[in-house]
Picture 1 (cartoon, rainbow, N blue to C red):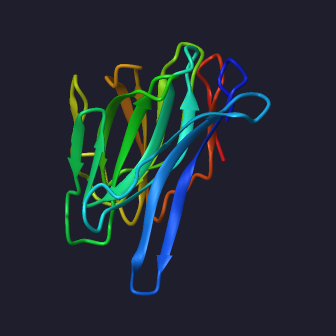
Picture 2 (picture 1 turned 120 degrees about the horizontal axis):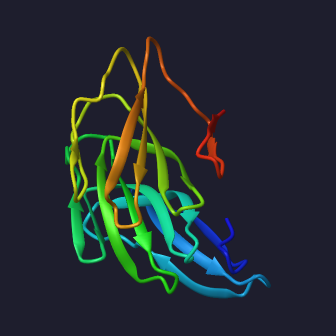
Length: 197
């Protein structure tokens, strides 16, 4: 995606294959200028034995701060905070949202437990919208409140979180019902209207 200075932000994961060891994945964030010259790159290499992580979604605010969603196993260190996987021996990874400043400085991270972000969007007033899927109703803590007891009807539900640039929760809305709830992408326009695909 592009920031407001027309720089390009790319995120993803590097996959390392080794015949003698399990596959490893490490996330990255890279920033290029408009001529595709790399300004900086940040790689989250193996942070503890057997750990892996990845960065999935990205959004930028009007000040060119960068917001990413991702996941990790074992542990993940970011901005002076180290998150631990909720169920260390389970195959499910723990999810997060994090903020980088325009120069790549790590600012903050929110532990989303089992809530897997399928999309991030910013509105015109620099509010962050994170659409996440979940299968279990687990608590998610923000600096100003904790979300508890989101409904689980059947298999997989969705929740839309609205967060400010300081990671405070403004509101959360569950999207649930019988069967699996699936959204490929969503947008938020300047009037605060949402479109789900």
